Length: 360
Ligand SMILES: *Cc1c(COP(=O)(O)O)cnc(C)c1O
Figure 1 (cartoon, helix red, strand yellow):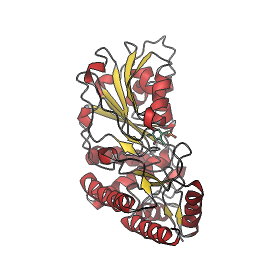
Figure 2 (tube, rainbow, N blue to C red; figure 1 turned 120 degrees about the vertical axis):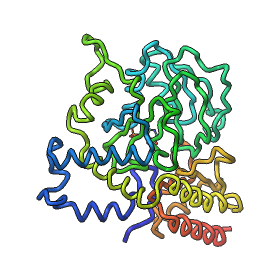
Figure 3 (cartoon, rainbow, N blue to C red; figure 1 turned 90 degrees about the vertical axis):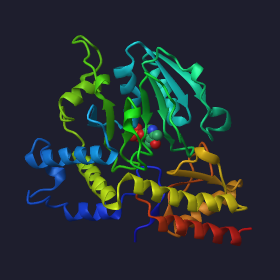
């Protein structure tokens, strides 16, 4: 029996996608082979990766002057690739809103000057700090944010106006959860294993003018240059073929649901079911308030470690898994990505109500 999986990532995938992948596991179309077994240079596979890119462009309305790259190494690799490729003058601004944003900031500091323009560390990253534009570096190569903070359950509900400085966003845990205006960004990156598909694939969407050539004597590894992948349509070496195929199926599923504006509506509805309960419960409390609340990751606590542990144990036995909070926040966290059906959240809330009445 399938459980309701609230994992932060790798995370739940749409059942329709998994069934379709199962149907096509032994033989994709009339190719006589599994997608996993295909040469990435074959006609069949070329059609898959092209279709995946076309669908992503259509669903996210990616302008023509942006490249889509299918890479590996996770979002964590982008913490280095972004400065390696974009830090031409040697400076970048960072809003430090959590652990991932901190990692991006620290990694960039290996390559140039990383300026922390704001941080919410003083309150365990439970909010998005107000940004003072006068603190932005006019001469920065880029301005980095982590749009949705997977661990702390906060998100940017509006984006900083960085003028001519390209805005770079880690969207690992919120990409495809709502429509966004790609043209506001210089570069977007996301590890696939939260809201796009299986682990192993990292999607980069970069404005063409930011993808530049390195000098031939550059020590920057060929594989870490965006240009390498851009010039070769993500086929410089073997791309993560199966993960790209699953992303294609996920994109087909999103389209069948009505696209990103419908995804957003459903996600808001799902999040409201949980937040509304947390706001009225006497036992469970959300750790984030107001407009900074994430639609994707919802941390909550009882304030009592033993009770938290009991809750996590009992949810698991009842078929709700991966609700234990990140060790840095404690308590619980429900990740409710696109593929989590609203029934999953409603049933969890019903369970929480019952738990509260039995244990108080
Ligand atoms: C999960 C996550 C990462 C790390 O992703 P990897 O693919 O494991 O490197 C980075 N940023 C955010 C926002 C994440 O949610």
